[in-house]
Image (cartoon, rainbow, N blue to C red; front, top):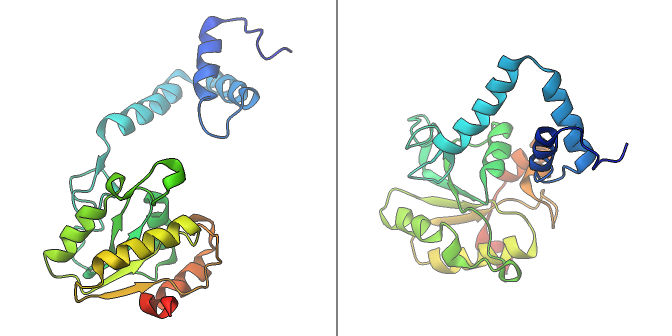
Length: 207
């Protein structure tokens, strides 16, 4: 069947919208839409309601910028977490990856990306000033750089180090169990957990 010969405009519109998702081509989109079409009406309504509520109601934590249902996320509001240790990550997927290791008991700071001039992303586009403010307010004794070991990630680490090096805090980075060029979400939990436990002073990798 020609993928463009839709018997219904409603079907075509739904397929077009699904195909806008990353990694979803028109054939996969059609398969997903036809699957939903076979489901009970209440199941489809529950699915669409979850997506709508996600977009309308999700928040970003006022402290760490992690995705949250409340103004302050459940990690930042957890009194059992060590608020003096802040792990700097690129995005929510990295928070989830580190949490899955069950080896880290501090809190996070989500930058929302990494410095990438080729993509037009500079320091002002990221949550860097809020990180510097958190450190300046006191109570933080260690900042861990846990960005991807790509050229952009390393450049962002160095930029942050220059901004923080006179703050009288310990600045560390993941041990190189995470291979160069890797992103945290694709690193296995055991390796990532060991890299957190065996983290290094950032200055050591500069020498």
